[in-house]
Length: 427
Ligand SMILES: Nc1ncnc2c1ncn2[C@@H]1O[C@H](COP(=O)(O)OP(=O)(O)OP(=O)(O)O)[C@@H](O)[C@H]1O
Ligand code: SF4
Ligand SMILES: [Mg+2]
Image (cartoon, rainbow, N blue to C red; front, top):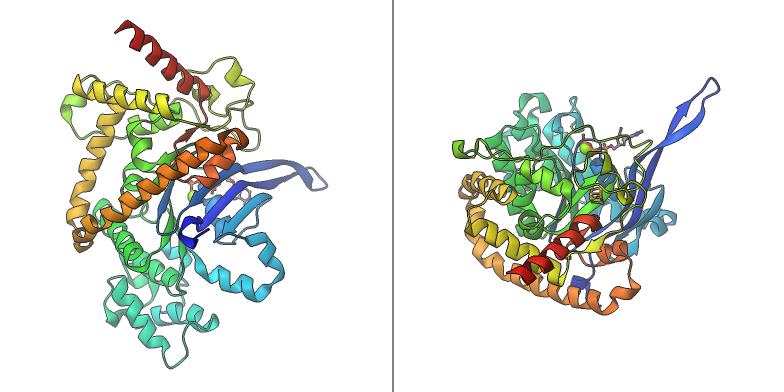
């Protein structure tokens, strides 16, 4: 198989359980199931967006990918190689670790306040022998140019920068080891909107220039959609919907994704009375998650079966996919309350000024070519999935076909297909 066809990152059934200690003689009384059986893959040069409420396990996945934590169970493959198998070979492990980097939500806490920028950037490069003492300054200046910071900041300390500038230093630090894959853990959520736009555009530019592969963690669907090729929606340690970013936004199937989308504010006074199925209740406990579908206590469509059986990931394929598409189209054409679609469109509008904000957007057209190639590639992936569908579980299929639209809600998925069949007969 050619290298381009192997996902750079492939995660299979990843779990992370943290022990809960209690009692007079401290012993383990239970586990926080922060990540509980997650599978996905990210193709080289692509971005996977990971969204979900606070505490659902997004950062825990990121930390395991870059080796800050070890999985309780499951596999992480980097360029086809099982990372756990590399543990025995320290030299190789160290080499691979430099290729996997992370940008943190709070750049201030990830930068040593006692060191100036020169030291912060020079140390990792010298330690990993990316640069020598006599060439390191040249490398640092190249990094500063790349992230748009003036060359005069070398002697300044982290507290002497604004939030946006500090995040640029965080990005320069991650880039200093020439990574291939970067986990961006909510890199813009601590910044104000105009600075968010600059940082997102910078990340997109750098990704294109350096051919980076990204896992972009975020709360806001607008920002995640702006940077992502695929999106995975997480709920209480599990992925509940997964697929191409545009599929997820135009045709969300899982009630949780629909609720996330409908929660996006629309800057339009005529939409004041819009019906929104805003989520009720709390996310639930990772220590003692609800039986069956973890979303059932908050789900308006929950059935008795949902309370007992854990739903499997299923592909939103063929007829159902087309039915959803036709339904969304007719809702749009009739100007009916297509809440989620409108929310998304409004959200996209608010993102547009960001696009104008950057030179890199000039090259977007050229990039569409590779996007098309990707679509064709996804198509062939789907055909392959259809050919071997019987032998693959939902999780495997999700891990091996990054573009395929999967959902863990059989009730809504099958309900929409049935409804479509009925409408088809009536009209
Ligand atoms: N070291 C740890 N020990 C015990 N529990 C932990 C640890 N790290 C994380 N957790 C728990 O795991 C769950 C997932 O945490 P995580 O930080 O991955 O959430 P998140 O989705 O990134 O949330 P946020 O959006 O707020 O950053 C939470 O319930 C958290 O309390
Ligand atoms: S399976 Fe679907 S309908 Fe049932 S509770 Fe879960 S999200 Fe709701
Ligand atoms: Mg987090």
